[in-house]
Image 1 (cartoon, rainbow, N blue to C red):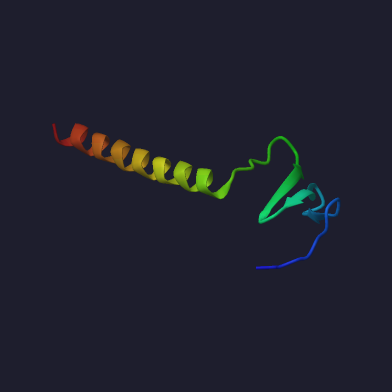
Image 2: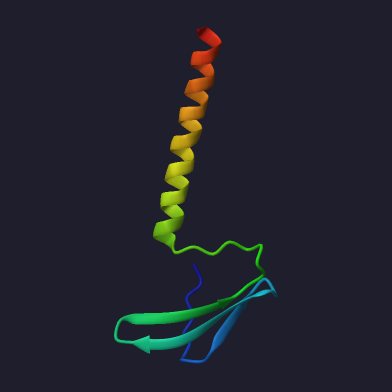
Length: 72
C-alpha cells in the first residue's frame, strides 16, 4: 500500500487517466472527488464487497441448477 499526504485541493493521478482530489476535510471524514473514464467502475469498498458476495452466490446457484438439470 502506498500512503500519501494530501491537503484540500491537492490531487493524485493513477494510470494517467484517473485523478483523485481531496475536496474537503472535516474532522475524521475526507471528501474525495474522482475523475475517471466512464468505463472505469468506481465503488465504495463495502458496496464492492456486497456485489462480489452476490455474484458468488449467483454463480453457485446457477451451477447447482445446471447440475440438477443434468441429473433430472
